[in-house]
Length: 428
Ligand SMILES: Cc1cc2nc3c(=O)[nH]c(=O)nc-3n(C[C@H](O)[C@H](O)[C@H](O)COP(=O)(O)OP(=O)(O)OC[C@H]3O[C@@H](n4cnc5c(N)ncnc54)[C@H](O)[C@@H]3O)c2cc1C
Image (cartoon, rainbow, N blue to C red; front, side, top):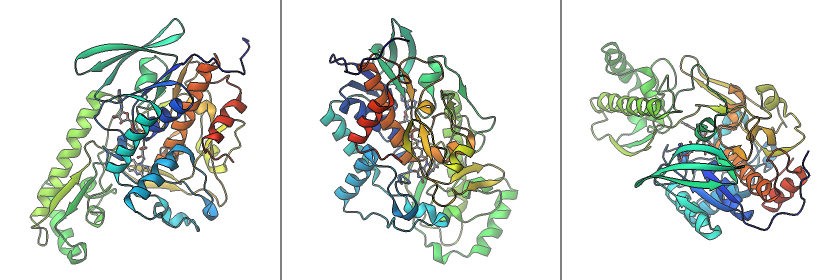
């Protein structure tokens, strides 16, 4: 085995992060703070991913049983600074109640959150490429050659380490490492914010009858207005926020994604046209729409280690944890609705280093909702606070392993842990 230098090479190493969702933002900031030259590539003109484009701006969960903070670091820095700027209050984390788990998420203003991320990129010297899509990944002379597609066409960059934060394992797949794709992914959600009606004035019985007539005519479907398979008022109660399902999706590639976006907007059009005809909804308006359909699940990497539902539920003690996690397993099923499994009291699961490393790879990492895990475990690990934490861990691991001339899996764990602790990551 080649020896690993405990003193870092002082020549600056390059880390490329693909995807500027919450995982990618934290990965890029941490890689830069760990002294790498960091390049962040994002196909849209804004960071945040699902948080901004998908309209799901309520990161959870940073606090666990008895109000103990389990996720800190860059994710917490971004969320708490956003709240401070906006003058918004934190939820009360002191008494975690599993039946009300969503109360402990932290609503953030997505515009301020994304602007703050941009400011942090500037402050720590992350080179950002918006409007740029990953076009190819190739191993060349022990480094990565990345082909990108910008508005003026293709261009190439080289990196010592590459982090896939695409949410869909696009870089890992293009680098020809296997990924896991479920036969049927969880539904997506096209999140909007509606106004112009009073939910308290809605005559539920009348609306249900109108709905059943419209459904029989094919004008509306149960998944348009809720998460179940029959009439629901979820859409109305939530004013359209995270309240519908777009079923049978493949969010991993552009073709599947196009079908999904069009199906999501068609679903919204059906809902709007149906509601607008009902008494009390004459002034219905869509004030805000997620710019993309939110994806719960598309692909996960096959890692050096993988988190199973049992590992998650029992809080398995991994020898080299890189992050803690806290959320019930929460699988959305097109037929069964929500399949939820609470954590037993006191359990705080962890994420092992190997779940971020595609098996058999060199200089390659993954973070966010694509980390190696089975479907049930992933239904909890995909949550934004955990994505932020795995992003930060991947950023440190990429920068440090490049500086120490070793692989992400062989970097001495203590070096990684020390760096993460110095950057306010909370370990068990
Ligand atoms: C409907 C719904 C409700 C949810 N509710 C909650 C909740 O209440 N609380 C919570 O904490 N979490 C929630 N989640 C989960 C959470 O929002 C996501 O799992 C998480 O935000 C994923 O973050 P990510 O950074 O891994 O990926 P993403 O947010 O998907 O970010 C990936 C980024 O990569 C970019 N990208 C993708 N492919 C490429 C490419 N090939 N080239 C360049 N750029 C690329 C994308 O544009 C995007 O910006 C919800 C998710 C959904 C869909």
